[in-house]
Length: 242
Image (cartoon, rainbow, N blue to C red; front, top):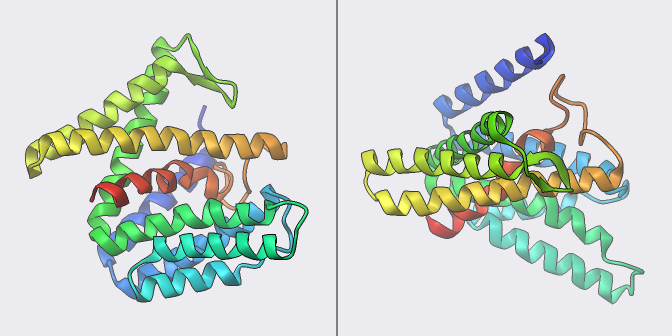
């Protein structure tokens, strides 16, 4: 059952996304993504038990990557530099680099989608992910019997397959209208596969941390990462194919 709080929070989020998409001003989007990165980074600090992790390197990668329109490449450079620094300092482990790998790098990949394809690219990515997630939920409820992964016990193989098929159908419809039918079939397939992986990755980190949600920022929905886990990982497919 969906609580009233969860429904209201969901409507507020959808409304905010629609308003930002309609305004579609670069500097507004830059600020929105910067705040998104900060909130996700802050949640990850608690999730990975890295209270002293600095947001400044992630912010610099975001700003420089935005200026040169190479956000994902600057994110990769950041990860390499952090790993190199930890190795230089002969750190006991490389755990600190994890927070710059996730969620920093995937959010920079999502921002790269905007830099490359504009708000339309973001919208289409979210649309395919929503079809995948919704299809997996409803088909899983109706037909799900086979457990999909111990990482996420509520997922079923039937639900995942159904979700991927729904995403592919949605992509195919768009491809039939806009052109490039088979291309959109292929792109939607990989978006769906990565969306499932994104959900599993977040579930894995939460299970290791022993928490139900990544945060409590959004009433009834948990944290920022709980809402965008699938989208930020699936964004890599759009960066690669478009």
